[in-house]
Image (cartoon, rainbow, N blue to C red; front, side):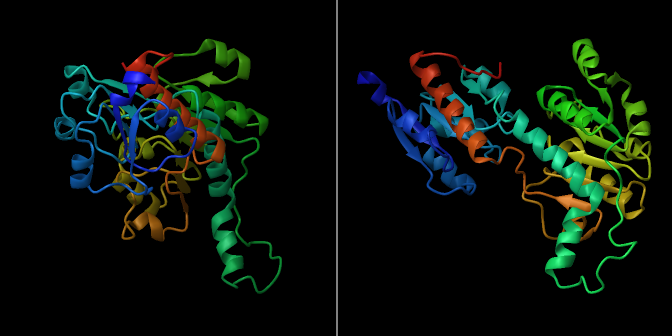
Length: 325
């Protein structure tokens, strides 16, 4: 270990093993023992003199945090694939390496996305509450919690990256017709899975389920707004496990109120955590999850391993670093 112990790493929230042990093998480690987001003033105080920060999606790492860390800061390791919580341009200007955890959580998130499709289509959550609340008093009835078929329906995938591709594979197992729209065509996957590339407008018009799998940037911010939702079928569902700000949430709420679409399954929101006053919470045609796309024991542990190794490999050059840029 030798001189590596001079390096200091701050972990903004408690992460699972083997992440902390990997870092402690080489560096001085200070980890917030709680899983909740640190108060911003506490975060600014805690990062002082850190050589590396291991952070989460809810931690805003901007110039103020980088200033507080000081000139020693060399690595910002994201415990996530997404990195819109980090000011990348500011980090580049300061020659700070920013890393993430690709190729780790795609299958887990694709599983959750498909569970949202099934739950939204078949009224799973509402039916569960009906039983738990003691409202099931008349046994089987022909009109109880009628839903929509998933098998044989059409799925529209917006963004055919790793997660979008894996979702398409799952959909084919359900006999779904799959359409996709992406910034670039993937003719290989089109051929392998017998899926079709179409324009965004055509995808919205034809799909029974629209699932979003894009990163958040200037072009994707509010890409699904009132004009796009108007193109969807009244019997269609909107599913989002990517980033909340890809959808204009107020436009979605209005569309649901006006019954312009059948429902929505969401794991992400414009503001997180979602407020209890948000109208989405009161709507029976929504399935709402607390941003748990990657939440399995195996995946979260692997994310901890990769994010820790990104720091080790950046600071002492031991191996692969998954850099954002």
